[in-house]
Amino acid sequence: MGKKVRGDKDRRRRNGDDGKSGERTAKTVSGVRGRESDTKKSDCHIHAKLEKRVRAVHILRKQHKIVVLCRVLGVNRSTYYKHYEKSESKRSQENRRIRVAILEIYARSKKRFGAHKINILLKSEYGIHISIGRVYRLMKGIELPKISTAKPVGKKVVQIDESMPKSVS
Image 1: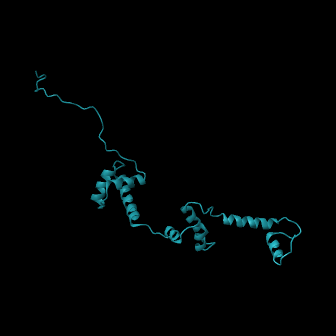
Image 2: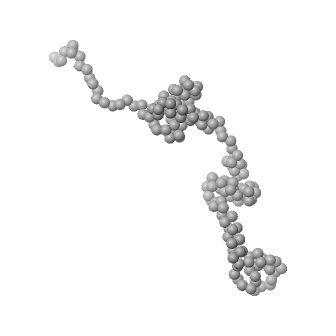
């Protein structure tokens, strides 16, 4: 082999090598496995989608500095903080409030009203002025069934006026 360096003995001791045999002890192997599982805790790589990399930074943030994690995984720090420290927007708060009103109206109407009638009641009872399309989209988001307002199709009844002549020649 080569010359032994002063730190060689310490290195062998850390690896579980007693110098006499090339096998590691079970204690050291389990320790190494434990460290490997810690590094795989996030199950992420630098080519993963941004959402997955941001989640990995969030998981590992207590073990490493966020600056280092963001640099290694290629995530901007501003993106990370924007993702995890954002507050709910005014639009989503308003949508949540409207969904509650829609559910109240829908339950009160015994599940018979569609988007158009619910929109009318939102304007008259709650003072909420929104489009029918937004009502429909919110109803679809909370998985309420679409109520069709199409008129039933049937036979047309034609009335014949007796006073008119039957044939004109």
